[in-house]
Length: 170
Image 1 (cartoon, rainbow, N blue to C red):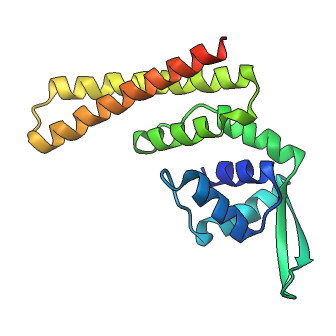
Image 2 (cartoon, helix red, strand yellow):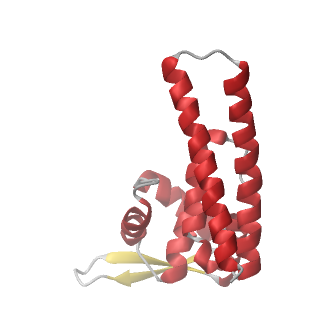
């Protein structure tokens, strides 16, 4: 997910590692707050794979700074990451889905529809699994409340996806 966030921010402008961190926090802090220890290795991987390029420049304070920008291949990778089917990990699904939707403006209409389709299929599957579990297992008060809330979150995401699909059809 960190690669997606980095490429998304670099698709808009050239940034230092500090700038990338600052932009991710400004845009996604309610969903995730990656540390420098997460951003640095991801930037290294992205650069090694040709998705990001860096340029050393002297800052106004006389210190060397690395500025990063997304390559054409990086933009294509960003789009691939956005429309790829969601991972199987249900714990990460809702956050990942929200991040992907928040970045979806970079996609064309067909790609947005594909993203929405993948997310809806997964959300409906997780909703059915969660409802089935609630129905077939006797939970005490707190676990039942947690899983009831999860059912609500999946339903809300499905409603959001329906709204986005209908808005794109206009």
